Image (cartoon, helix red, strand yellow):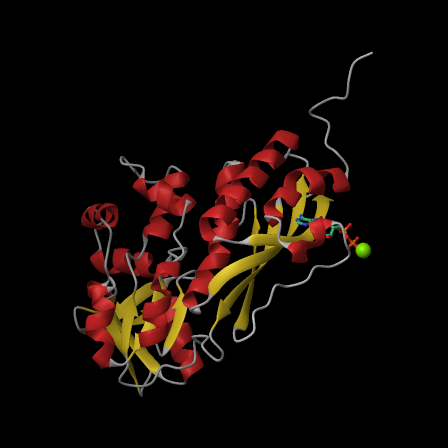
Length: 323
Ligand code: ADP
Ligand code: MG
């Protein structure tokens, strides 16, 4: 008689025990993932900041990406939201829908990669749900962070006269996806690496708390996310595309494009950058620049505007046109 087939997928409880229990890091509130619910380890004197993001294979990352890259993406897109709010992450809950195309070894790789992420960013797993799906793989997470009472940085605090900053290069997420899809060259691999391992800007927490009147992470694209700040704050924003910081690969790509305005608009619209776009009073400029942030515009009383080296453009049919 042969022994048990090592590739046979254990039932739901076997999977939870093997794949996910190690991720609790011994946190007592996780109740060893054996109970109906968990206890959130709250600390007196802090607010709990909560965010939720799902990733679907073939929608939020291309089919066939590695389980490790899927795990990193799942973790980091959620942490980016907490980073933008000035919160320090500490725990998460997750619902995982396994597709038939994910055999046990791939599930193990996903769980091991989650363990690496959890250690790197200091989070414990509190619980979740495990289902199978006839559709694509999906992971949905609820991520918890802490901040001082009332200290969350909202989208709605920008005021006319505030300066618009971005925390780092714009457009690399968009170019990174093109590189992963094989649509553009990426000789150094930096664009693909950036797409697969976005760096949530948790390092900016103190700076944001000290300086920002409003903030959001750049997930939808710089133009859209700066616009979210303006809309939530009840004012307009003027964004100068020529002032956007670009990485070396993005500059090289831009230099090869026939139409600079269209290309810059693409970089500013593509999304998945996971930098932080923020509003701050002009007096905070030095502090923000010392932290690597770049001034790219300002908040105004009137309607929002996109500029190229000071000249205003407006969205028209088929793209942005000179006003
Ligand atoms: P219930 O049926 O009572 O909702 P489940 O059987 O779904 O509970 O889950 C049992 C335990 O395993 C719970 O503690 C739950 O939080 C945990 N759990 C289930 N799936 C996951 C997962 N994907 N990641 C982490 N914990 C999980
Ligand atoms: Mg139950």
